[in-house]
Image (cartoon, rainbow, N blue to C red):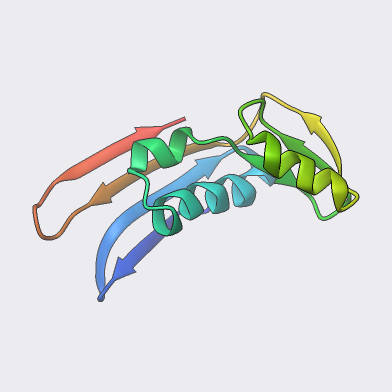
Length: 106
């Protein structure tokens, strides 16, 4: 579900999608943030800790979520709970310069 293609200079560099119902958008966002903004490899990005929210103050975080960020969310008034279940993300990255492809799923 939610298949997406990321383009750089009009060329595809990433194909990504997920399974997991309502948890897909949050998991995709977390993975894209790690890959595009924090410059992690696609494998590192897919394996990074995830957060899930449906727009309320109740937020689920994986146990590996950074403690400093969790504390900040609590200060803002969010009610955090640790959850193990998240969407399954599948992604393939492509480097147009080197021709290298990498894939990851979690």
